[in-house]
Image 1 (cartoon, rainbow, N blue to C red):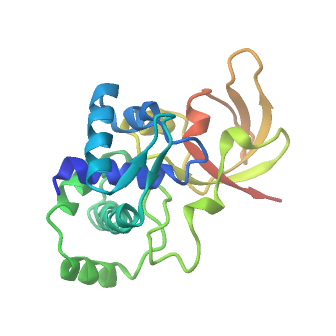
Image 2: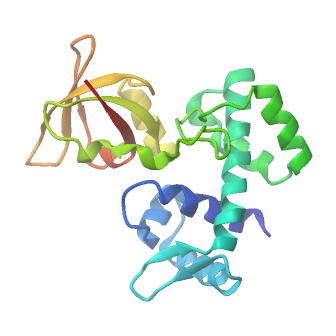
Length: 217
């Protein structure tokens, strides 16, 4: 399988836990590719039995596709942990390097790397590493856009999209930060939040669908 096909399968697997419908547009946004390219690749992967793609734009991995995708995601996230924790790469710069490494990694290498890293639970972006999460899944998270005003939440995961990661960094927010939802702005859909230190932030309407949280008391 080509690296490009593997990247599509990995992206679709991850989008299963994003609480939004998996669409060509969403895949295009995450992968920074054109809509026609997405359609062409989905048709190819469907013909090979990795997914089903209905005329109504419902994209679903088959058992075969899910098995391959889960392995790819685990490999990718382990490399991200290594790059971030051991080589001190910044969070917004590990994805592309992990992509290059994952396509040339065999099972024995990944078993050794997993042992070396101590079977980490999450990648630098907060995603659960399949098989290491002790029963946890990314499905336990909630989109920031879904949280009501007045609720305290902890940021546990962010989408692995380069443009978004640059924006997220500009907010001076990090994974594990706790924030309180102040209000959803009716005019533009942005979100006003308060950090633990009292700092008030406004997060753009698009970005709140890329941030995943868990409620805290």
